[in-house]
Amino acid sequence: MKKIGSFSRYLLVGVCLTIFATEAQGRQTGINVNEVEIQINSIAPPFAVWFYLRLDFQPGYSLDIPAFNPNNPGLTAEAVSETHPNMLAGVVTTLRRRGDGIAFEVTGLTRDFLELYQQGVANLFIEVSANVVIQSVDGAGNTERNSLLANTIREKTGAITLTADQVQELITSRGGEFRILENTIDFGVNTQENGAGSNDVFLTFSYGRPWTEGVFMNAKGRVSTNAKDSLNFIYFYPLNVPLLRSRDRAHQLTGQAGIEGNQKFSTGRFTANFFYEGIIPNFINLSYGHNRLRLKPVLKAGVKFYTEFENNRGVMGSNEDSNQLFGELYYFIPVLKNYSLIVNVGAFYDFDSDVNPSDDISFNYDIALGVDIPNTEFKTIFKYSNGENDVNYMDGEILQLGLIMNIFEQGIEKR
Amino acid sequence: MALISRDRAKGIVADALSVVGDFDGDIEQFTFDNFNDFQKQVFLENLAEKIKAAPVIQDNGTALPGETYAIPLSVGALNGWGSMADCIDYILDYITI
Image 1 (cartoon, rainbow over the protein chains, first blue to last red):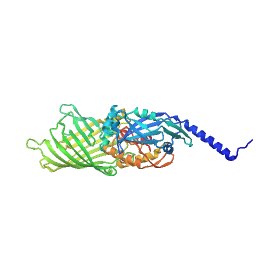
Image 2: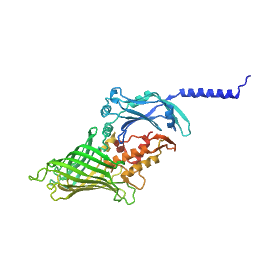
Image 3: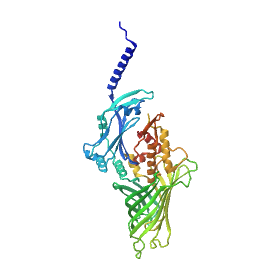
Image 4: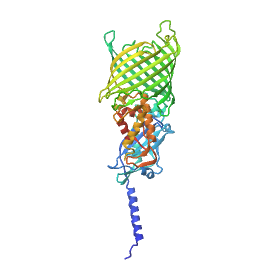
């Protein structure tokens, strides 16, 4: 019998192993998608829609990240819309990797497309250039190969869409607006009875939205069942423009234009404001060793140029064009373990001798003592407000007992 | 295998949080309840920047040189976080390279 030499034996084993490996690779199975999710990035460029595909790996296995690119040479991904293909010019799709699967980051979607997409009018899905080789690895270094089919990616990404809130936030970011346009409403009851023997209900609000890309409105105010309450006000700024920001984003300059008045607009003015807003160091510590987050105060200071259209200075008081310097401070101060003080202080100085005949610097402030109610969205608030309204210059003092909640947070939780 | 350890994610959150607040102990139970809009925005922007700048080291200690972290962040996401612990978990759930 002819013996097989050593070299020939090694060659035979090598050929067998190669055939086995090739067959094993050929038996790649399609991996299932456990979950598909959609998220947005609205905080810093690139503003994007993200699709996450979480894959059905064997227990103890996760994506072999270093092996992904070598296993998928030349793989490309593209965001596709069969209904509105012309609206995706300039859109870039990037494939991302993580332990439990892959993600696609889609940048460059326009406002018009996003709105159509959210309404279900424009479809969007991810098309990859080939089935994706998914190699997973366990803690001992054992690997397993599967294939994520291009059709699966197309089907899963096409079956999910953005919520209206996500589209709105993304559009806001795309316009270059870096401020949060958060919509809040707080309500409460005046603890002091009015002249009719009942307690007035008041409501404070903040509302914002972009008109178009780069142009934003916001409104804030306090209104009550007593329309003559001197503390009531409505500010409406249809134009807000960011001008400058510091590198750590903690300081910025902003310009805004709008209208400011009391609740009935029996006093009011058109105004253009330029102000600094920034985070300054803490200067009070009342936590006395308890581990509380001591938020740094937010200071806002600037100059206002305005022209009045109504005023409350009587028949002799003509409407004035003037300037004001103003400052505001928001300071949340944790006290001991469960209490909080929330301080809002405003100060302003008007240069016009008719508007400010005594040449005074005026103040208004409110101080709220909050007590957390565990496991709820609510806090009890005892709030004392005092000072001059910077629109009508009327004094006011009020003690309020109320509940505070954030409707935007409630909305997100319901989603 | 996670792309980042929980301790490293927590450290990044603490770094971003220190721009808007002071604290002496563990951050996980802190909430966003009393952040005003400006503080939320500054926190999120710093968080995004610090995640992007962090070297990619998987939770088993394996470094992936030449890779960078990427994650979607939004105000909607923040408003869904009840605490800093939720923020840290979100990073673990959504961080990619």
